[in-house]
Image (cartoon, rainbow over all chains, first blue to last red; front, top):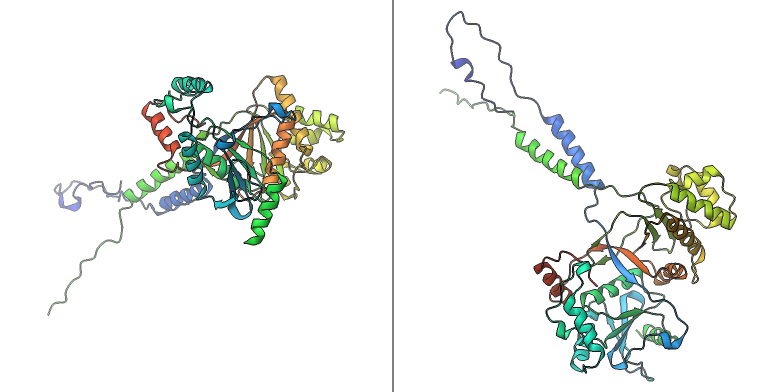
Length: 213
Length: 228
């Protein structure tokens, strides 16, 4: 609007007798409009929630008292992560030794490497057996319903089938810790993991380690 | 010596482009804005790499804050008569002695954070004043506590309508694990084993297995399917 050509103004003489219409400026003071505009912008910036929340699926197993119904994990493929106070993670591979020599400490930035290393070692010691074929077929087909394409490396799909990660958050672990560790499972593509309660001996060990620091 | 004449320049600045930009931004924010639903407590949710969007279906949401207070909310998609039915059956089952006005008020209440004994006091208040009442949270324990009853009656009410119900859990970063576990127990006792936890989106770290899977999905046009 502001710079509409005003037709040259006075310079264009029409000669005597021709009445000049009084030229009104076409300029409008836009300051109030700008004020209002920015007021609204500020309002919307403050009220808006830019990042929309997402959801994360969690499937819990049904509690069973019968021992034979519980999934048994091979000792060689098990990794237990215990979430403790102040974002500390305690972990051990396989069974906890009586002298607790394999009870180690790490944190959330170091846990990914431990998971990946464990996965690697499980893959290296993989022995092909009857259960493998089913997993391979499933990986090759993908999941059309959820638009997951078939895995081109489907032959490798069952290499980590013995890997089981057991997550045991203790009473001082926060909800964030729990979500973070479940997230690590997704990041490292761990197919089998479980969230269970701590054993008494593990609680003792955590307490002892915390006291020692 | 003639004085040097300084030409007078207009102080009027052309604000048109400025206004253009301002209104462009304004339009963007108006379009992008989605107002936060009213909530009894401020919750800072953790981040996750999960890309699954939250859908506004019929849902049941359990919220817990850093001090372990648990809030229960039912979010029916269309009508509030379901909420009325839920409170009615709870009222009868637990003998709460709520009046019809109280129960109608429940349909407008965004979330419940009081034990059954305090429900009458909460629902006697108009919805806009409920925020001022200090809510101690729905009692939970290792067996589910009163939350178990809330979930049970909600599930029953939704089953009669035949609509699928979604279960959302929203927790604060600093909430302790036992609170989360008690909430899970309340669900488990109702034989509900599938939940969705509300998180904020976070980038997938590069060089990990998941980033490889995601790029493969993208290449095949699979879109953002939920990670397993």
